[in-house]
Image (tube, rainbow, N blue to C red):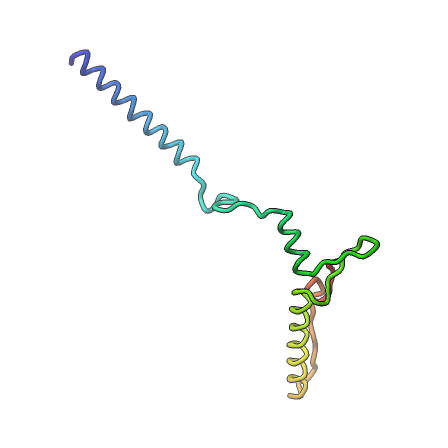
Length: 115
């Protein structure tokens, strides 16, 4: 084998080794669907706070306490849920249900704790 042929062979091997090593690094550094935060940026905390305030119709009293507005989206959804519950209970009671009961998971679902 000539010196030139040997040089070309060594260069080709070095290039292939570099490509394989670079490919292995690239594959190893790729995120997968199991990687936390894969494919999305985290929510902007300031925007999330503004969204919560808008949902509850945030107002602040003279003491600095936050309150939900009666006209807020939360109030509309809560009123709708109460009306549906009252309608359901009235219908079931008119059917003479034995031992009527209500089960509540007492948290933000059944009481306002926004402030």
